[in-house]
Length: 269
Ligand SMILES: [Zn+2]
Image (cartoon, rainbow, N blue to C red; front, side):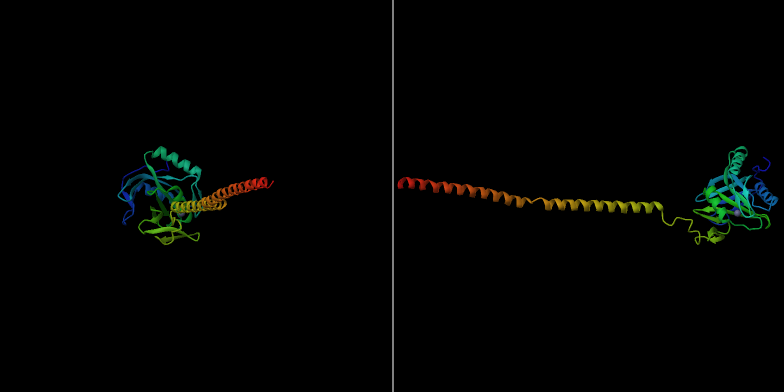
């Protein structure tokens, strides 16, 4: 492929890593020259592609070596935006598999003719959706401002401009370059959704258990008042026995009373 860059180690340049906490990102001269030349070829619209290279994990950050660049053909581009189409991705993967089978896509590059170096709302969307590995970077070149180059990298959930510590963000739908921790909060989740879900689930379970307990208690109370207590049943039983005893006693007494009367009558006759 004529429009790709063959890896070469003749003079690697640092794109970031000069400030503490930054990943160390280098680019070989061949790739950088190619990107600058590519940017100058057409300044009527934005142009771009992907960066390929190697990644090494350092203590808490990464060491990324950009060893090649692949043009993003078939992009949907205007003077202020760039879109990677399905055809663009197919082309990129085809070239990568043929020319750089052992390298990884370590990021992307694009031009900002006359606009300066920053990441727009749309650029942030691309970076967050297609280059969201912690070691993937974005390179921006402005061919109308002395080929000024800027590099952007991930720091946790934030996208930072190398050398400036400036966080890239969006405010009210307009593009702007913010400072760290000021206006990018909307991109980070303030409370873990898992924590919130667990809390709600716990609360609902407690409420249901309480409701069930209340219903059981009400049913039990109702049954208790409907059935006579064992004490009242005992009294009832005793009353019945006493009543029966009294009845038989009365019967016996009457029998006794009747007998002598008859005899008395006999005597009278
Ligand atoms: Zn852009």
